[in-house]
Length: 355
Image 1 (cartoon, rainbow, N blue to C red):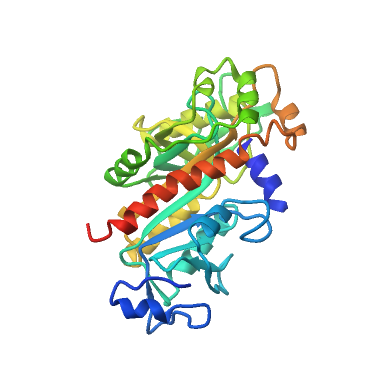
Image 2: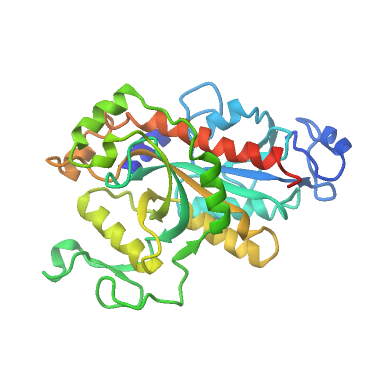
């Protein structure tokens, strides 16, 4: 259902130089970075969509970052999906656009722009997501230990699969669901730096997360899932990235098994996503070229909705009411969680940069 909310809502440079303090004064709304005088970036904040303007209207994933971190200086990006903004403290942010293709091309365009130096930069994707109701409640925040690509596969319509198959989605170069061993000639799992992920989790596990009354009203429908009745929390788990906007209990079961299959049981499915595999594919290639440090990448997803309707409601019924207040109840709280949790890490990276 995360993808439904994302689809619905989506329709609607003073940057610090690491070299010498004097350079900071050179970056302004009128004096822009250039290839012979690039910006030395400490942290890149990636968000995937915005609604309308970057400030002052209905927020998307980027707006709280712009307004609360004072990302007031704009660096135009002609080849990117969205301009870059900066706060003057070594932090930049942008919007990649929704979907794998937008995310991958946006990251590639940004990271190869000679006006920026990303050699020591941390990259944080902070976006909303659907969450498995067996794992947690809305507004929970999940640091990804791995990103699983759910797109590259064979697929047979569910009405034509053999009776003993649990799904019509078959791994690449395999002949039946979850046939082992997993293929090795195509990249479908991206494992993040566990030390960094653990640091981010420990740095944020005590951050207060929002508990909205409208959100609690929705929880009452999920009484069969004990984790949904508990307060939102920070956790670690896998994010599954697909360009298909799916929902339903059977699809969630597929997601669990798909993550287990590709991670060899080392991780567990927690959140849906759309852009993460594209971002990781681009950053992996850029790291090979020496443009970025792949060990300085974090993926943060916060739960805006559940990946399946409550028991007694079909996925089709859920889609038919996608614009209802109930379905949108977790949207703003999830944006708040993404900023609170992500900003703690961004602030600590900047303030403790010498360490």
